Length: 312
Ligand code: UVW
Image 1 (cartoon, protein in one colour):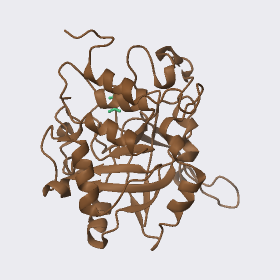
Image 2 (cartoon, protein in one colour):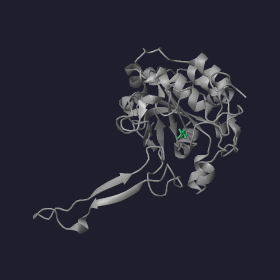
Image 3 (tube, protein in one colour):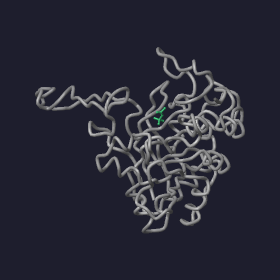
Image 4 (cartoon, protein in one colour):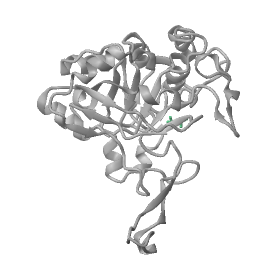
């Protein structure tokens, strides 16, 4: 039995790749720091046609969740035209309320979402997330205004010649290199790298149990060094938890989450929809674009719903 504190391979990898202190002891942005104004300016220049692609899942009662701690959005009306005119001039209006977990559909995981051995990114103690105050450090609202940069889509299902990867299929660093080479695209510092497993189709086909289950295709732990070496700002997948499940290292839960979020300080995007974008990239051969994934500025949050947009 591995010692919970040190013997796991993922913890050794995390130590080697650690960005703690790289941007200062108080840093709460992590790899988002790679998105500089120059990076964003260059990304804006990628817009050629103005065509937009919605990479988000609808936030509705038809979402993938089946209940428990994470449930689908509950949308209720608090004002409607049928309530009658609001003013003597005949004005009618509607208001609405949504109750939903921030993690129920397309989302970002903040640097307060996951850690191990009592620590979050940059040595912040797990106790910095409190019941009354939420995430005192590393909350998602710190990065909200920064998530506009160059996006690159790597079609791993396309690389393997399948419409979607198999259950528990692992994406390795070599796969990421091979996909980039096949598509003729290179990764630059400050990119949001998106990878397509094809698993979003399980959700659209109504198989949410498989989509959210513990047999998901996704990133293996070798992707962590790849993302680190390429100075990737954030990574996003069309699967529900980024990584391949169950994890290959025996006795581990979500090792890719733990290394990326806690050690690299990398924000993770989950449940993105790349189907339309991938079809377009396949037809025009352009796999890079301006990416906007700003999320919602909920203070002290450990994540955020998002409707990410790619602009070509
Ligand atoms: C966990 O379930 C801990 O993480 P995520 O929602 O990021 O997959």
